[in-house]
Image 1 (cartoon, rainbow, N blue to C red):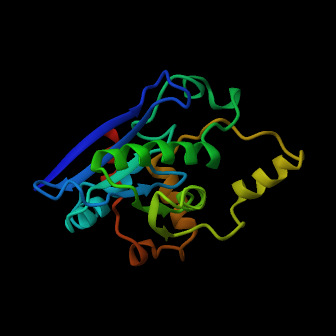
Image 2: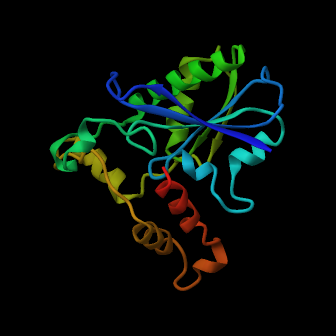
Image 3: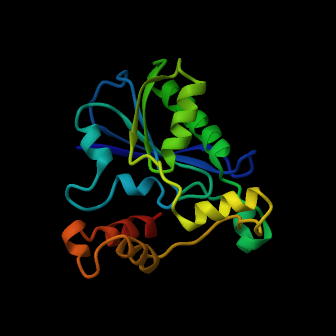
Length: 218
């Protein structure tokens, strides 16, 4: 049996806006065991790691070993939505949840998690774009990170949006918007474009509806 809790680490009116973190752990587990903190990527929030489908909860799989597992929503994702740029149309503000902001959020949640368990170091897992922020935090705070795992790290510069970002920095393009909204249809279309035509079922399970179910409940 697991304990599931949501913590508000930072209020929406505070600098940086709202910041929330999920925790999953076995009931009766040793409260002093070092925690694990998971950092999501640029599209899906923390709910990705605790899908309501058999075999699709990374948090449950890790918590089954007796460790407390934390997964934060970086500002602008999931439960970390507060007043500010996202109350306005995306074109009215510049991007606000960059890598530096993500590192600030990781630091706040890491301090909270370490304080909950009276330990000095945690294990840190970065996923996709989150590998950038997780690596940067670990490099700047080695005394707080025992182990760093990078899952699906970014290593390529072939995505059009990344190229556009580079050209924007060089003054060749209009600035990016503050945020973007995604839908099931847009995600499936993007995934399908990376796979041989008509063969998507051979490469992945259809678990996106489970993620939508989880995020709709947020």
